[in-house]
Image 1 (cartoon, helix red, strand yellow):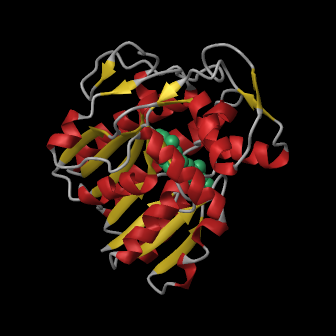
Image 2: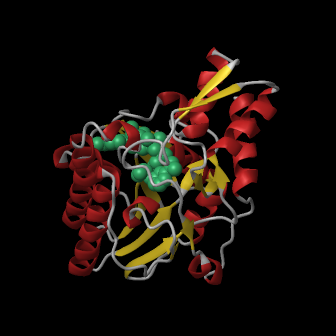
Length: 312
Ligand SMILES: NC(=O)c1ccc[n+]([C@@H]2O[C@H](COP(=O)([O-])OP(=O)(O)OC[C@H]3O[C@@H](n4cnc5c(N)ncnc54)[C@H](O)[C@@H]3O)[C@@H](O)[C@H]2O)c1
């Protein structure tokens, strides 16, 4: 199949491109490199079935060009501003890179009569519902970050475009995803900071923020397993067993890096920053019943990620 991965030079996108090539698909990676980087896809560029297209998915003319030349049959939409902390002081970036990209991708699919789409949504669409076990039908979605709002708005656009144009769309609400080629997030930050100064570590919040972390290869397995979605929108919470606190992540990183007596300096407060949801728990029965289960629990995913990033 001819597959385009929009946001393909990022963390999850680059891992997905690799797996799609291994399966024998023809892959175009479209990215504006606002957060992704060429190191993530350098190896893939040697593969004759891979092509890299630099462009902005919030611009219809740039999408139109690649859709005209590459003629994709399946679109993976992973482009977004994934740096939620940064957009707290600049909501415009969510409007352009998270929301407008979705509108323009759907418009381009409509123009080119392309029916198959995968969309990477997020637990952030639920907002702060820390005492509720979140399932796909949890009512009252009320995001508290600009990022969550732009993703929820994207889901609404997808619902209408899918209905109006008979599309088949698979939407996953990811928890925290970690693994090879990280571009951001708590593990990425802690490892970088400890390489610079191994005597102390600044930890945002009180360290008790506790969330499920999924290993990226588990997530990609699920994306590929459910690629052939029926007409309409199929939505899954994708998650793992267990959850890991920020302090536990710091402990695992120090252990794996062989560091002892690192002083943790907590900035205090429940969340890492305004808009951060400090705890959430997913009900993942729906995707389990459909036949997928993660191989690794949350703590295991953290440990593997640290090891993979130390090896890189
Ligand atoms: N990593 C997580 O924990 C997580 C959790 C929930 C949802 N998601 C979603 O999964 C997707 C992939 O996330 P990731 O962790 O790989 O992040 P990432 O930042 O590494 O990847 C996103 C990619 O999109 C690209 N991009 C952004 N705006 C673009 C634009 N206008 N045009 C073209 N490319 C653009 C970036 O350069 C980057 O390469 C994102 O949509 C993100 O919101 C990620």
